[in-house]
Amino acid sequence: MTLWFVFALMTAAAVFAVLWPLSRSGRPPNDGSEAAVYKDQLAEIERDVAAGLIGGPEAAAARVEISRRLLAAVDQRRDPPTASNVRLRRCAAIIALVGLPIVSVAFYLPLGSPRLGDFPLAQRSRAPGANQPLDNLVAQVEQHLEKNPTDGRGWSVLAPVLARLGRYDEAVRAYHNSITYAGDSAARRADLGEAITGAAGGVVTAEAKAEFERAVALDADEVKASYFLGLAAEQDGHGAEAASIWQAMLAKAPADAPWRPLVQSALARVGGSAVPALPDNAVAAAKDMNEAERGAMIHGMVDRLASRLKQNGDDVEGWLRLVRAYMVMGERDKARSALTEARQAVANDAERLRQLNEGLKNLGLDG
Image (cartoon, rainbow, N blue to C red; front, top):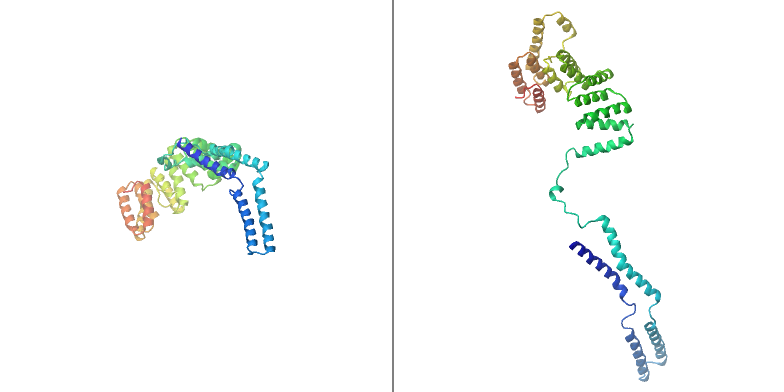
């Protein structure tokens, strides 16, 4: 109520500011006294002529000028305001009294509301949910794709976001559409297989495995597809096959590949050896060896690796291979001893120490 009262006072002040000039007469307030002054001036000229203070020609010129001014003052006093002036003033007054409030209300109603409650400070500072902007983006892309269902680029953008949000069934559909409208590729097939696996709760189903196999057929070095094919073999109880797949991945991977710790951990899980691959002639010789001979050969390789690391302890990947090899052979005491030596060797290099600790965590030796 107070707000409306303030608005009414402001409107009244605005109306008064418009009407005040209109209410004033255009006639000067001293019109009557002005004529009397001119008459006194004429009488004074006559007195000056009688007293010889002014000459005849000057007195005549002064009389003409004062008489002209006197007639003009009398005419102005007698002329009433014209009808047109009166109508203009009335129109302006009506507009000020009626139009100004109407225009003000017309502007205020769509833009403001006196009954709008205060917005609490706690809600002003409250940050939106972490996923809210991403959800809004997904909704916008989905609306776009409803109108443009053949936009392959749109499906390619939407699919990984849906997978990240855990909406795997929708992600599977989006990846299918991405392949249909944006073209087939090993990466898209691998992503599709991963989404199918996610929808199955982490189980590599036959459908997912088929997609991974298609990805590898398109690109034999597709990392994600190869990893999940190894995972499928592990889930089927074929640990040796899984180890073979993952060992092949590590053999071809660069030393700084970001996915190496994940594959190494999976390899240790199935009991596979992560020691360096044997030369071709050694592999051929191992085929003719019995179990004891092959074990002795592997121990010899591990011992040589340990000797090399004692001479050059900067090889983080070498230390991880050594620790993992001891774990595979069941020699956990030697693994912990190698862990201690590795940390001492790279203690002065913060980056190498960080890489070593991350790799050891994946092997279950973080302490």
